[in-house]
Picture 1 (cartoon, one colour):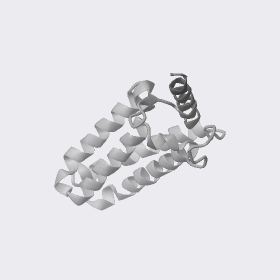
Picture 2 (cartoon, one colour):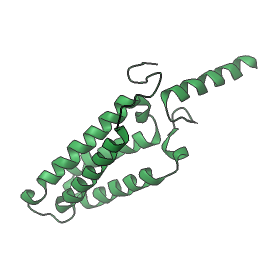
Picture 3 (cartoon, rainbow, N blue to C red):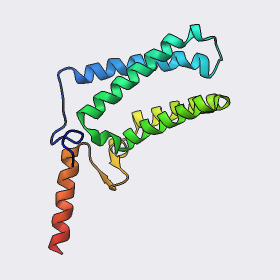
Length: 150
């Protein structure tokens, strides 16, 4: 397993939680402003800066999570983010679908923000629940040991 993307221990830094809370708040503000276009079809001067705020804050949150532990991409919470990005891309390709797409993104965000940890940290491709690469490695060691004991 690549230790840069999947470190031996989750990377942390001082005030990471506070930074992510601040970025999430800015992201929600930006997404709410972008609804001016997606839902209400307002002129771009009324929502563009908020859309950029949502885009930049979302990108920063994604990068921080990825840097902390790339397992994020394999967990349901990371897959949820990727699904929201796919829906957003579809909105850009098919603007007539923007209303349904926007509310699909909001529903996915609400679900993955408030679902239990056993759902958020579930790895569907491995069929295990691991909150970090280190825990996944441990689960894999235990699994391999159980197989060799048979």
